[in-house]
Length: 125
Image 1 (cartoon, rainbow, N blue to C red):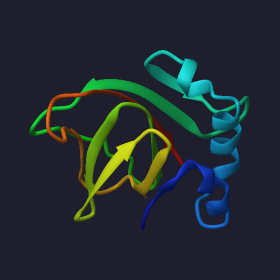
Image 2: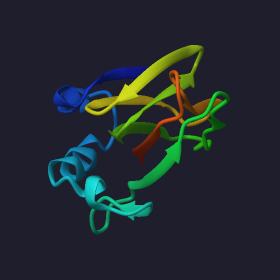
Image 3: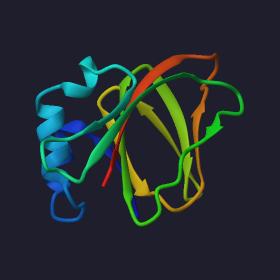
């Protein structure tokens, strides 16, 4: 399963993506925008975590982490990056999100034309 859409539609996926209420809660409070690079819990007693990261895109990008038995929901907070997952290539820019299986190979941080700094948040659902 791959979902690529805009943040305005995030809540509409609550019936097909588990723990979407935690994602919506965090994003409604703009927490990842203010958080430093690191790993965080969505809220007290929540099993859902999110990771804020910052990188510089490159021609070859870098392999994404695998999260077996989980769905990864990635949101671009600043800048833009290309993500390759399940045979598709997706341009993540501010206001867009990508949800995909955490089991397969993922390539992140591929540059569009010149290296660009970008900041993302990945929810591990």
